Length: 397
Image (cartoon, rainbow, N blue to C red; front, side, top):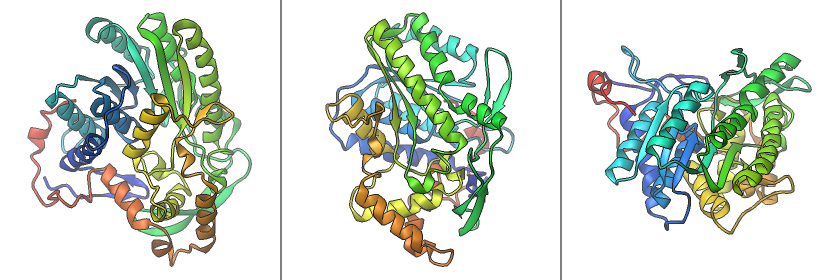
């Protein structure tokens, strides 16, 4: 089988297993080029297969030698379906880690379920030394079944105040076009908070604590995003914003809880705008990211996902260069939110049109990053080569 990219708007319908291996390798190579740092020894990453979670796992494993457990909901080869990008990322990471003697265990399934929590806790107790130092919560899901009542909730990317119309990038058509975000119903707001808020994070930490598997000084960090004024309609004033505020409130609750239990701490970390599989489908965001990339690259301060998470972990979570705001949020987005950066992005926002967006923005860089998330556009991968899908089907994370 020859695998070619197929897109639908900001969604990739195919991915390339060999490209995924290169995607992971380049991140590992970056970490190996950096100085080692002192960090946690035993880590659980909930949402470990792509984006922020994958980069975090790579930084910790190859930057500190940490043993990691990854939890992700991914699919492998099914008939002619090649499997998800996260499936191949996880296989590539695990192979690379084990090659260097770094233990890595994967749990593929529903992180929201009680069964998954029980499985992970059993593994920690019986095969992972009994205690963990760090939990990273980096889930990006649009659907969650509440384990308490069995009800399934679906998130909605909508406004909570007024209908919003703005420009975005369609990667499939390679065009800039108008998109409209509708007003959410109260039920949609509630559902989005149930899926993307802090409830499941809290359930995980409480389950781990009750099982007595948290080490003294344990830390937990949940990943989030705020963004600038041009994205406030989506994030701050949108259904996502309601969920993010719930996540931040949960961090404060967990911080007090962990301080008492294990002299621990809990934080929300606000990430820099980056192209991830989740962010690529959010209206307006791809255009903002492309404009931001242009400005930050010109200033020499652009970071990809691996650089961003490595700096967060090395300098802020386990270092002495912690950037934290008045609401107790870690701010590795501090370079993005610099006044000079945002002023230049806003100026470009006023100039960009459907005719000039590829020149005014770093469209090329944003699209390349999006394609590489799915294993495409690497200059050293032969995309005309025949892939043996039967051999691939034998591989498992």
